[in-house]
Length: 86
Image (cartoon, rainbow, N blue to C red):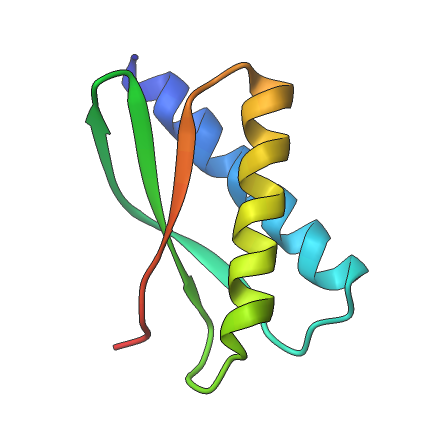
């Protein structure tokens, strides 16, 4: 996978996360970080909430929904990895 393809998938993941949390009327946003890992034909993108105290079920729901949609629409093997806010 080229660096351009990785950047495209990061951008699409961010757009889809933004759309999802807005559509679900969550009171938080998720940010795809610049770091990523590419192993065994699988792109791992790290996503964090914009603040502490985000309900874990809503956070995971958003990541899973967007991950499925991203894989389907972009025909790519992508995993959105949750992480905590520093």
